[in-house]
Image 1: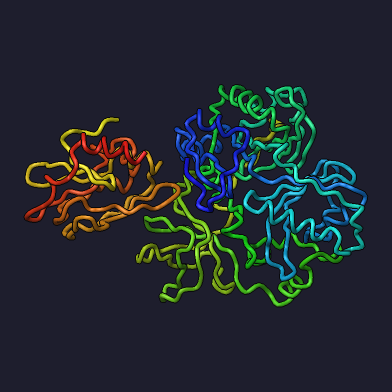
Image 2: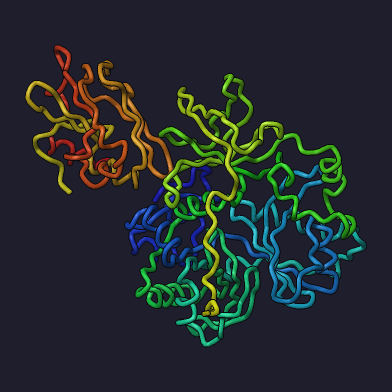
Length: 390
Length: 128
C-alpha cells in the first residue's frame, strides 16, 4: 500500500479489504486509498463498461445532506444553476463557484423531497466544499436564515457504488424488488438493493447507461458482492479509477483538478448551460455575468492526435507556427475509439473544429486535430416499438 | 512468470539477451505488470547510439509514461516494428515477442556486469 504523499493516513472506504482481496492495486487518490485497477486491467475494465457492466466503489465521494425550510433558496444562492427546476426525484449537474466565478467544485444535486436535497461532491474537495457550504449558510444571501438550513456531511455513515454499462439495469434489477426500468436519466428513487434500503440514481461518470447507489456503509460488502454475483452472467467486472478516468475522458466529462479548478469559470469549460441568471442572485453571479457579456477568453477543446503518441496533462498545445497557445488538461488512449485523445484550453479564437494544432510531448511535436466533444457518445437505446411492417 | 536465465537484468527492470553478435533488449515481467496495459512504445531510430543508464525511449501505459533506460551501450540495429500496432505484446510476451531493441554492443559493454536471473529475483524481493 502506497503511503499518502501528503503524510496524512489515507482514508479507507468500507470496501478497502474487499478490493485488496480481489487483487485491486491500491493508490492514493484525493486522500483516500482506492483501487486504480484490478487484475483484469484498465482496458478490460473499460470494455466491460462499454459492452456489458462494471462495478465501481465511489465511497470516497462526499455526500452532503441539505434540508430545512430554506434549503431550496440556500441552494439557489450557493450554485449558479436553477435548483427550483428540480422535481422530487430529479438530479442536476451544478457547481460551487467562488465570487470571482472560479469553480470550487462540480457537484450533483439530488432533490429527494420537498426541502430535502443530497449534494454529491468530489472526494478531494469534500472538506473545502463543506466549509464553503457552511460559510454561505448564514451570509444573508437571498434572505436565507441559518435556522432554515441544516447541513450534514454523511461521511462515513453512507457509502456509494456506481454500476455502469448497457447491462447495468438487468444486473441491478436482479437484486431489487423495486421496478427500476422506468427510472429516467438523472432521476433518483428509493429502492431496495440486495435487501438494503438504498437511494438509486440513474447518473454516472462513464457516458454509458448506469446507476449510482447510496446506502448505509455497514452493508457495503453485502451489496457489492450481490451486485457482482448478479452481473456474473453478463460479464461484470469490478472497475478501478483507471477505467473511470478513460471512460469519463471519452465521454468528455470534466474532472476537477484537470478541466475545472478555481482559475477556470464554467463558460471556459463549455458548461454555460448550467448557469441561470434569471433565477436571481447567487454567489459568483456578477463575475459570471461579466464573463458572459465580455465573452470567454479561452475554451476547452477536444483534440485527436493524428500521429502515434499520447498527450497528457501539462503538455503544451501549439499552433503549427510553433507558438504555444495552451495546455492539455487530460489526455490518454481512447480504448473504444482506438485513438489518442486529449482535452485542453486554448484561446477562444483557436477553438475551431477541424483546426490543425500540435501537442509537444517530451520535445516532440505531434500533429493533432480539434474535434467535436464528446469523443464518444453511446448509441441511442434500441427502439422498444417495432417498426410498422408494410 | 519466472525471469529467463539466459537474460541479464537492470535495477530499472530492463532485460538484455545475447543473440549472436548482437543483444536484444526489453522490459521485465515485473515492469510490465507494474505499468499495466501498455498502449504505446516510443523507440529510437535505427542507427542511433544508446548509452548505458540513459533513457532510450518511453513506454506509455493507460495511466502514465515511463522512461526506458539502456542496459548497455551500443548502436541500435533493429527496433521491434510489431510494437507499433501491438504494444500489448510487451504485457503478454515481455521476454519474447515484446522485445524492443536489437543493439550492437560497443567495446567493453557491461553485459557481464548486469544481474543474472537469480540476482534479479533477489533484487525484486527488496523492491516489493
